[in-house]
Amino acid sequence: MATDLEHYANENGIKFFLMNFTDLFGIQRSKLVPAQAIGEMQKSGAGFAGFAAWLDMTPAHPDMFSLPDPSSVIQLPWKPEVAWVAGNLAMDGKEVDQAPRNVLRRVIAQAADKGIKMKAGVEAEFHIINADGSDISDNRDIQEKPCYDQSALMRRYDVVSDICSTMIELGWGPYQNDHEDANGQFEINWDYYDCLKTADQLCFFRFMVKSIAEKHGLRATFMPKPFGHLTGNGCHVHVSLWDMDEQTCLTHDGSDEIGISQLGYHFLGGVLAHAEALTAISNPTVNSYKRINAPATLSGATWAPNTITYGGNNRTHMVRVPDEGRFEFRLPDGAANPYLLMAGYLATGLDGIENKTSPGKRLDIDMYAEGQKVRGVKKLPLYLIDAIRIFARNKVLRRAMGDEFCDAYVKLKTNEWDQYSRHLTQWERDNTLDC
Image (tube, rainbow, N blue to C red; front, top):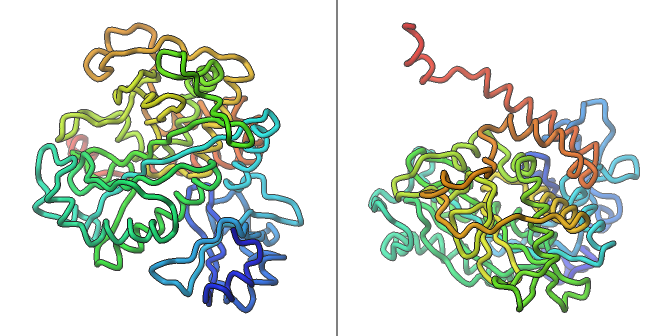
């Protein structure tokens, strides 16, 4: 683990650092800093104008500085003279409260006060598309059920193997690559870590996948629903809770029917209780709601939830328990900000633990086919604006994530919805021009 970036540069032949931060919309922002200047930059940070990114600031705000976290540094295997390093934003000598990485760090500290550490792994789905973004890149990938299609996977071997080999070189522990449920869709799984490290990795993963796809003359997208007739891009999060020494899994109980401890059920109860508000973070774009509230796709199922339920090893629910001691949260999509995503799940789960919230009855049914038979099941929000309004009223997330962040997020996301609402579509003209 690097502690001195100047020494790291000398040892690894680094010429430039991407001094990085992630804004509220999950967009990666960086300055390219020469290695000769990194010693001073590690002390003072790289300066940015907050108004120039998706943060709730104005041109009148003073400079903010990205103070690099050397433990996050990653040398780019495809451009080894460059290293990427995540930073924590500060202004006037104080942390920027609305900055996503700072939000997660604060929630992690709240968990640590309770003796809890959250570990997480992600399943980040993406499409490999042509350079202009108009279609998938493989015109032979046309099966109705293309999931695990060996031939389609091997036709994209050069890209997928290049990404996976890069991850092996980084020491992430990738262990499987597959063609997913949509034509042109892929997924690469890697080891789980503490939730801050996983969030850093997910930020870098998206950058890496796009960069390597471009190197092959193609394009990669994590857009939640890039094609209306195909399954969208989820970003499932696998979570378990541990003691601070990472020796005991606090969410595991071998005597339970599905291996979940009482604390684990309370954690799950908190997530389910606040799921409607959490959707504003896990599904943060207008397009997100075309994935989770979609009709069946070409393959026969969206694989996305539309109700707030949990089951055992059952992929039709919002939460699946695939193995003892951990949960798979199937709601998030590829647009979710990695830091806010982890912070939201941890904050709501901690509230569930504190209040001993019950998750209710486990439903061992096919929610796609039999969901209408269950009374009292809550539906997920239908549109982004619905989720934002629910999020704005949620006191638990506000208390955990902070007023400055919540106010900024609601303001900017409401503005995004307003921009979308002002956009005149061809569908409107086709259906109302002659009314």
